[in-house]
Image (cartoon, rainbow, N blue to C red):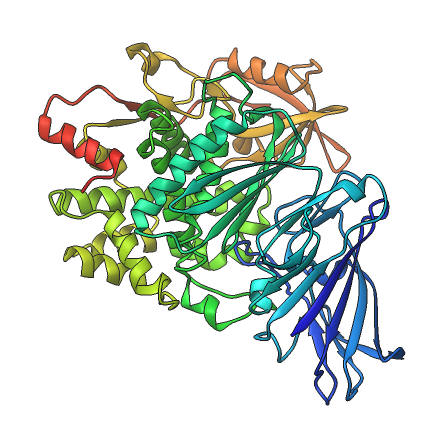
Length: 602
């Protein structure tokens, strides 16, 4: 047994203290290390940089530690149990790290718990010490690890089968609110920190229906309990999956208000986030790339199939909302239109394939810069669109006998349930085995080329008309066509994003072939005058909107302290904004085909 003890040392200094006891250390000198990244988030994060003090001792005698690299230490050889004491600075409020102050304590295992090299498969015990100072003394623990001996507040000891299981259980400690619901005989807890007043009842009602639909899709639920941890902040968004829990971070204003039965676009986004992370309970945490089972988290692990695990999950996270009846068909297509628009507005889709996006995740997707829209494509967003295209194509070519639902169920039975890793061509093989269809050309098009996906043609077979139109405003992200006049509204833009700067306007991104790029404007430029006028970001936006395409606008800007004078000529917006026409199909066969897809039949 490897023993860990977690002490909430100092909320003011944001310090956790961890005590690690190793009963049978390596006689040649035990090596310990922290992971460099966390599963589900593919970026080297170097968690060890937050260790501010580390000591080792055996029987009260201090031992020498030799640092081997940025995340590993070797302790001098001893023939008796040894103990390490170390402090971890926790001031990064994300779902991937650790955060501790006088409002709450949150931790993800890789940020706190050193691994014992050679003993990673040993059972682990974690004791969370109850704080003795107010207000921490009144805090409670929300944790998904199996309890061994805990008090009413959750402080005490927990057990994990091995180190991987230990670090796969995030924890929230504080004065949180909690609600519960049951799905397939499994208790689900929803723990919220950062806010007290919102509609717990509606949220649990909606989540129960969403989770039930996912269990129905896969056929069974591989956990006995599940924990949602939601940290509510002023502005933030994210989620990270775990084997029987998830960590979420979300803006306060988008939570469902009490007595408000309307599902706002913000709340819809929260439900989709919860749906996404819950779907990972099967797809990623159990149906997982073979490469992830063979290598650890001390260095990058490469696969070309991340789109399978994130793209397919992104497709289903919103589809499940409409299948469960939580949102309407129009709501679903509004969300889908945003995804199509997001992909179409990035010229990176012409330069990077889905497989390349998956493989290059470590250096490109998680290290995006101002040129990202021009250089990469998201394996989340485009992956979701290809998953949709794959689903509709299977349904169409098999005449409704098969769908992506059955493919994912087989992926679960073949790989997830028995704990086998998915080989690089695993999904393509399963699609062929399940459907008996030859879809090689579709996979080559969607995964290994930068050609446009034939979405509009496929949608038409399901009674949905997809249109790519010019944006009608800077905030236009697409949606559902409400009237025929929508196509007649012109919009003038410059192909750039900007924000307010004290001295003027800061250019954030410049898009390929746009007016800003043609004029010579670059990301980082500070625009100080437009046609001789000082403007803020909103005024500049309105000025562009009121300008005719091709007209001359004189722009004065600073770049690296040098004043420049450029001529900008706005352009009509490109046809890159997705709108759906949901006019009811007159053909009964097409109508049934659409219903089977949206409701999950067939």
